[in-house]
Length: 60
Image (cartoon, rainbow, N blue to C red; front, side, top):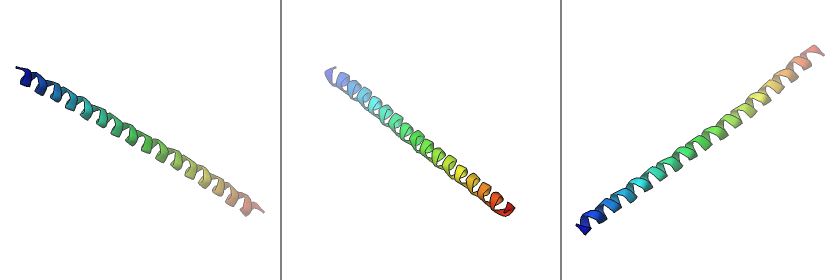
């Protein structure tokens, strides 16, 4: 009976650690996306600034 209980406890621990590691991976993925989106926003802002420079240069 004790062996069965031990196996059940091991199964619970394994399940919990698996869930925790999956959550950590998910957080890392979300963090990567956040960084990627921020970089894209910066790139777009730079492109817009460059476009404005080009249009002002053409006027002169």
